Image (cartoon, rainbow, N blue to C red; front, side, top):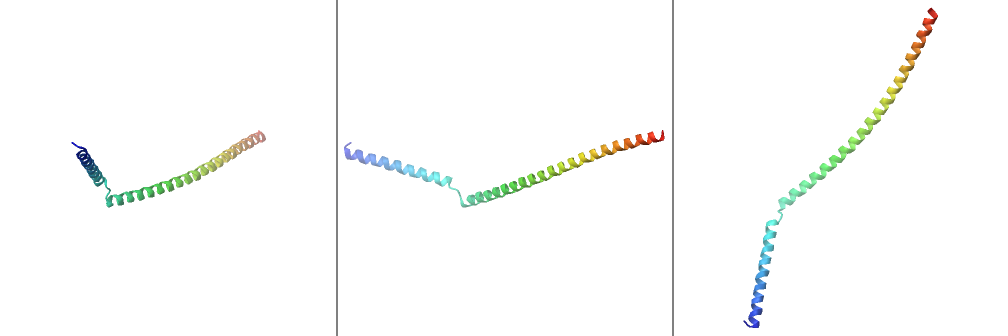
Length: 107
């Protein structure tokens, strides 16, 4: 095999390798290509996910506000209960004191 035949054989082998690589690349892109309907479906799913996240954020905000309102209401109710219990305790003491004075006045 002389030099010219070697160069031609090498060129043919390289050309065949190039063609096989190009064909393999074409096959990979052919089978992994995303169709337009799939892209539309992905966009729709992304939009629904975004809307669901917004709804979740709104629900969290509402629950936090509601929790703050209920905590405030509970604090007020506890304060009112404490004041009522103090008043009842004072009223009982006063009633006991008046009973004792009444008994002393009768006896």
